[in-house]
Image (cartoon, rainbow, N blue to C red; front, side, top):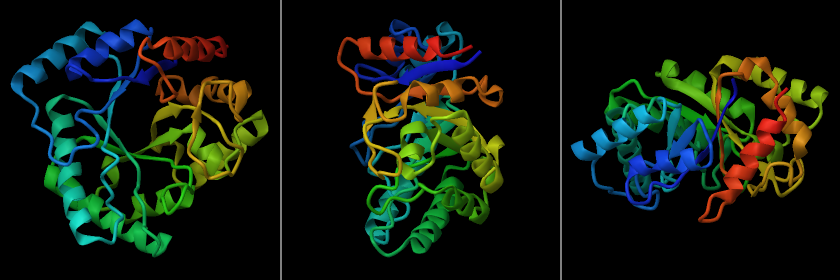
Length: 281
């Protein structure tokens, strides 16, 4: 069974994300464990941990991932930012361990203008330092990116280089974002182009590294390098691209969460999930 869900707010308490995912009929969840715009968030309390665990159990122990703060940039050439990023990411891994969350999704960061090779080298080194500092078994999922600006991770070769250079390869997986790979130039709209994209990923990274998906349509066209999410079937990828992915038996039990635009009533999540489920054969 394909496990479809969404990224939900943790306003009022992280355990309340389970109420929101149940409201929309999801069976997979992604959250921020803390405000993504803060460098020094409060630690997880024992009460929070228990409330989260109880709510998760009541939600049939659905798959859950956390997403690291967008402030974190392990590829930066600025020493102060790198130092804060290493500490913040290690703290995210520790929070996730306390909450029993097995995956932390993160963007590979930005090289800031001094080149992809330098950025990847810094990112890999600093990622290893954060993993050493956290010293736990939480898996880091490198998210595919759109290639916007000086961001890393839009080419499968870049993700492969990071994994190959890490001392902690067993702790590294991939989160594939459909909008991002499409914007980066990987077409998934036809059965043929979808297979070509996945064959290329398997050749360079290994299909078994994929542990999680973000399902987002793209406001912009193929190879635009612009990260703009759209509702399922309303963007440039279209329904057929998602049909190809959802019916790939290799990913039949992989968690897939929406990051599409949403209002306070969560109706967009319900609509997008219904659209996705209608594509499953």
